[in-house]
Length: 108
Image (tube, rainbow, N blue to C red; front, side, top):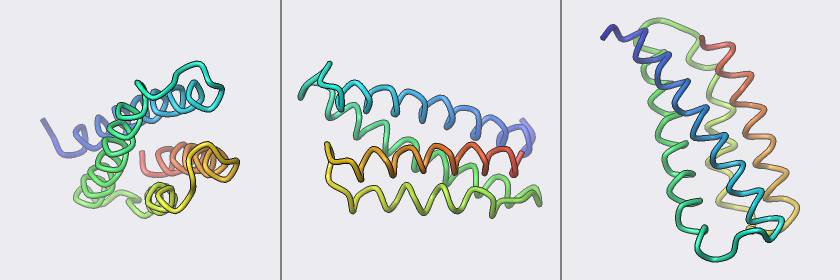
């Protein structure tokens, strides 16, 4: 597998993980799910952070616009500073998703 194809795969898989993370977070925020979904939410968050970092590195190796994903990575790392269940947490989550979409489009 070429590095460029691996970079595209990393961006796509991470986008799917991010969508799952947002949907699970929404179900937690709306009270549809309780504590049983907390650890998968955190595991998905970790996977999205690792996937975004992998996409940055792979895009860098092929000479692409790797910097386009850095705002999404910075916002993701800033998520740990917010309190779950509060408005700031879900607002930052939506900002992360928007930054990832724009960054993935720019890095592709």
